[in-house]
Image (cartoon, rainbow, N blue to C red):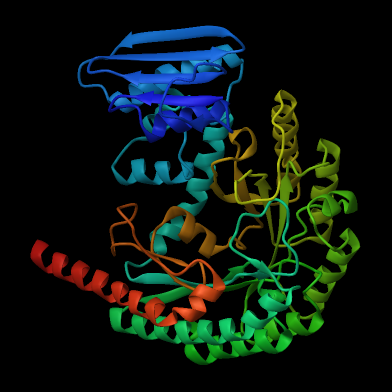
Length: 486
């Protein structure tokens, strides 16, 4: 399937509306002479959409109402055509954004009543009542967390772009530590990361920022040696006021590189939350995705984490992995629940061009993946509540990822970054610092990017530090604007 767009109203949203139904569709500049395509045309006062599929043509046109949003009018017409001709009823309707819960926060902040919020989801976006109820319940749970956040709060993220092996579905910038060239990068990378974190602490102090959560992610942070992990965490403990943190997370995701010593180091140097991520409890599916460990290794790693004193543990599962089934996924859910972690995060498999995984889309996938997520009622029965939600482009059947937690164990960093309520200062290769204007949540965000690859990050480290000057410049502008407004 190919996508052709014409006119000012035919842009990003129209392109991604077509991809709700045809995820692998490619945007092309001209109408193809052969093959299937979607055409969306936005004129001054009229909209026209056409679908050529399996040799048949289907089209619709409509006169746009005066004052109507041209982009929305075209997308609505296109969505209706594709929904009717494919027979699919996407649960999130024509919503293309990745943060449905944020829409609720934004509408409420603007003074919208609950009926208006509901109408936005059910009528404007054509979401199902079930998905709207899910998003609303999460927004209600998040509300006290967001209301308690102060204007100058921020979080720090430190990225470790290394893994023991690369999972077939992964699109993150990470390198496997099994090859000699990568192993030679790890120690200089840790040294530079510590240096950047020192600079971040100084920058935060100069800007008057209060660091509330700290997150070490990846990649796989425990792919570092025990000595390197201790170097990093000892440096963080010496550089930051850990007592002032609300939360300190370290991803200890994979049991094939997470042992008792590393779990002890993580606990000793102040982490309050860790992740041990099985993705599945099926040995066959683990092999399918390139994992070199077993389900029993996951159980053993979890037991070792409890023995090391970790009392707040997250476990990730993925619905839709190659070779998995609805019953297999339900088994993984039951296995995770039996271990009794404080958090269970359920992702829907996302197909990205940078990953090694190639999955042939079939109509049956819709029912299978949706049925897998439906089994998450097991989490409700076990006392977990959904507390954050996001969607990704390329996710199977346009579904979602949900973080589930026991009451009081919600990950604050996940809420802060997903709802974009305060600044995230990011360190490491591939890091993206997100700057939020104090007191103006859900406004425009300014980003400062680090170099993407570890070797470039190391070699051009002076430029990484120079870019961080943009943080101070941002807050100087914010202060100046506040003074002018007064």
